[in-house]
Image 1 (cartoon, rainbow, N blue to C red):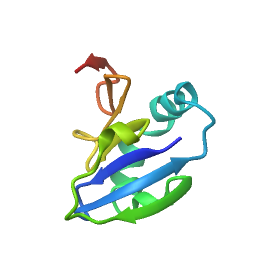
Image 2 (cartoon, rainbow, N blue to C red; image 1 turned 45 degrees about the horizontal axis):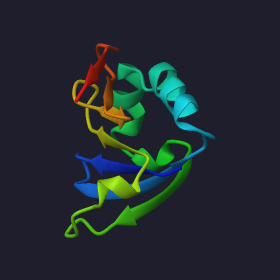
Image 3 (cartoon, rainbow, N blue to C red; image 1 turned 90 degrees about the vertical axis):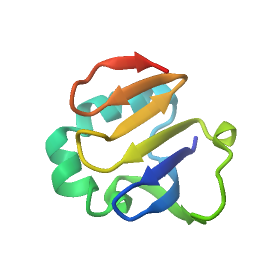
Length: 99
């Protein structure tokens, strides 16, 4: 499984291979671990500290999001999100939103 990550703070794109076996586990991890405190105090400063394998991508090349299982935007807790199967999981309100 691989996730496209747009890191706003570092203005970088990443391919993240999470330490989860499927999308359900990834969503469960996101909902329990990616709290506002975790994002603002930890992930904001260095996304590669999040467990899994990370590969920086060329920011000048538009990514093919269809080649990824999910995609995420990581910045501050109020705008960090994960998109899986057309559902968006936000950090701050914990609601699931359809695209």
